[in-house]
Amino acid sequence: MSNRLIKQVFDNSDNIISNGFVKLDKKPSKTTFSDVLKEYKTSIIMVDTHGWFIKDAMIEINSSDHFAEMLIIGLVNNEMLLKIKQDGIKDGFYRTTTEKINVGLIILNKKKIYAVFDINNIFPIVDSYASKEIFEMINHIIWSKTDKEYFGSLREVNDIRLSVIAPELARAVFPDALNKYEYCSDSLGFEAESIILVKPSSITHFKSVVLENTSVQMYGKLNEMNIEVFPNKYYPFDFGDNHFDYESFANKTIGSLVEKEIIVSNKRQIVKEKDVISEKESVYLDELDSYSPDFEKVVNQYSGYAREIEVIVDAESKAVDSSYKLSSRYEIIKNVNQKIENGLQTMEKLFDSTKENEKRIDSVRLEKNLSLKIKMFNELVKNEEFGLASLNTKKSPVSTISNVNESDLVVPNELIGTLYSKNNTLFLATTLQRLDEAKKWLKDNKTEAHLIEA
Image (tube, rainbow, N blue to C red):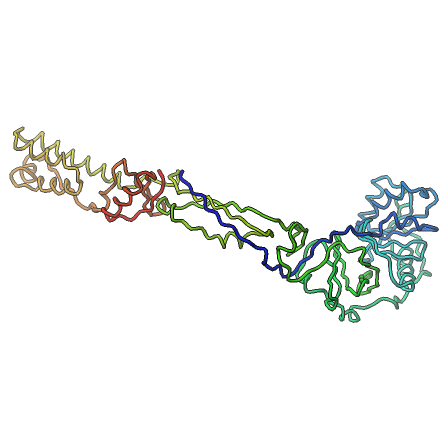
């Protein structure tokens, strides 16, 4: 199969990415579960109704120096409770609830509250009064809104303390009060499993945080992030600069982001210095030398980002395969020739073998041009002395050949190529060496066919 490699290089250095997120070069200094454990004094309550962190937290607690003396309370969902039981965890007191708690929580020493997304993404609450409210609400749920409990063994909860009432949540912020805080335009339309947190668009230097496996509603305010802890109840948590993994950007050039990790259109990727796109195209044999690929289309379909993109198109000639069928012309020509030969043989048998008769028959038999051969044969059959009338008297009629299209009688010689059909379209299969002859044959015989490789 003949082919031709066609290349073109695109310089995208100045192309603009309208918005996205770029990973910061510095390694964030985050509050981890280990940091939280260092402040343990009297108790730790872990609220994890999403399965984000409690299993990993218990592994870390088990390796703690103070593990034996720690008071551990867990508020989880039924699925997490069964996992705790199946994993053979016997330390701690756990209860299940169906109450909606939108974020993981750690309540340390009944005072300090942390929002938890996993054991490496933990954020302390800003307001001590808000801490008190959250603790009172969780305490109310533990004693009044739970179904099952696990303390060495699994059982139904029958110890309901109606005296532990729910607080008013006076320190919670409601969504209406957060309208002035906006998501930066860079985050609009981001629908990945990770949530992108951004500072308000009024801040000159936008920043964001990527937290895995969360779908928590949040609103930014300087270094604070108001997180929806309970339905429509938001509390401010500290998202200081040290926690930021990614920085949002607007209208940056690709050249300025080379070798950096970015998130654009829900996809995380590295901006490459150079990338190569290889494509294959099938073209007709006579178009191979002049074929010009649509490089722009190929580049526009490229889903990544690179300063330089080299597009290499391997243009291959279309070639005969099992989907092509031999043109019906060959069968028509074979049948016509056979009919003529049968007629000539009948004539030879019925008439005297004279030189004149033999000459007439041989002139038809030896004619190479099939259209002319048919004409000569028909004239011979119609001849009053030699042909049809005489044959009919001998009761062995030989009929003329009719209803044959001239175009169906034309095929190239084997050196030039072979005609095929596919989807009612004619194709001439030839070689690169015979291409000019094939073009000339099509022109001379006023035949329309696509040229493919034999």
